[in-house]
Length: 384
Image (cartoon, rainbow, N blue to C red; front, side, top):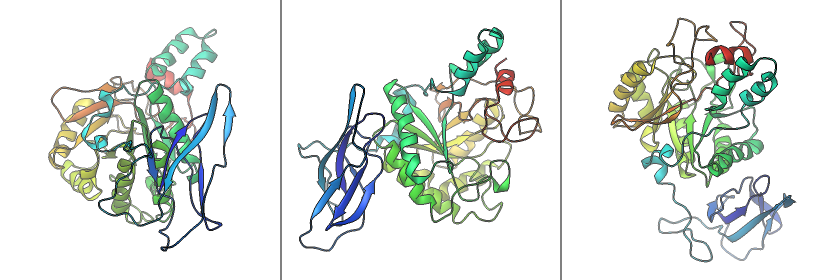
C-alpha cells in the first residue's frame, strides 16, 4: 500500500513504486487531498528491501504546483487489526457514508459548464435566440458524465476524477455512469464493452479517480435487464458485485442499474440486484435513457426496493416529461422531465437525476447520428 496525499494542479499526481530496482506497481491517480492508502502491487517476502518512489508527472502551472506527498509504503500482507494513518496521526477518510447517506443532501447534482448545450446555445445566440433559450434549459441542469471503454485504463481515472473534483469544487455532487460491461447492449446501437478479464482492473482505475470525492455512480445501464440475453457477458453478476465493492471502497455512492418499469418485472429485477451485490451499494437506478413516466417508475422502484431490503433508488427524468412510446430510439414528441434534485417525501427515492446526456443521440435511428453524439436539433425539440 502507498499512503499518500496530493496537491492537484491541472490533474492528479502519479506514483511509481520500485523495490530493489524493479517496478512493483503504480498509482495512476492520486487525487485525495487527505491521506489515503492506494494498493500498489504484490506482497513482498520478508527481509531488507530498497524502496524508491517515482513522481513521473511533476508539474507547475499558473497559480498551482502539483505535488505528491508520501507518508509510507507497506509491502506486507494486511491484517484484520491494521489501520491506515498518516505520519501525523490523521486517519484516512472512511467510505462508510457512501452507502448510508444520500449524496445529494450535501450538494445538488452537478451543473457542468462544459456540457455541449452551452457551446451550442452560444453558437445560436445571435441568429436563433429562441433555440438558444431552449438549449439554456438543458444547460441549467446538464447531465451525468459517462465513462466507458472509449477511455483506456490509463485514461479513465483522470477523466472521472477531473469531472468529480470540478463538481465538488462547485459545492455539488457529480454523477458518473460506468458503462463498459462485457457484452454491452448485446450488439445493438451502444454495443461494446471490455472483456471479463480486463473489466475489473478498469473499474479499479475508475475508483482510483473518484477516491477522495463525493460522487454518485450509476453502474452499468441495461446490464441486469439484459442479463443472459446474449453471449459474451461472462459472469456478469459476479463482475457487478466486484465493481460495487471496488467503487464503494473508494467512497463512491453506487446505484446499480435496474432497467425500467416496462422491461423486467419487479420481482425478477430484485432477485438480479441481490445477486449483483445491491446490499453493498446505496441502491439502484431506473429509467436510464428511457421515457417511462415518473409515476410508473416510482411504483416499480418501490416494489423493487421492497424486494431488496429497502434499497434506495434514483430515477432518470431527463426525457420522460411526455412518457414513453413504442419507439425507444430517438422518439419524436418527447419532453424534458422533472429537474434533477434530492427527493425527501418519505419514499425510498433519493433523487431525480438527468442520467442520459440530454441532446445526445440514442443511435443511428430516427434520423439521428451514432449513439452518444450530440444532436442539437433533437436537444431543442426536447427542451421546447
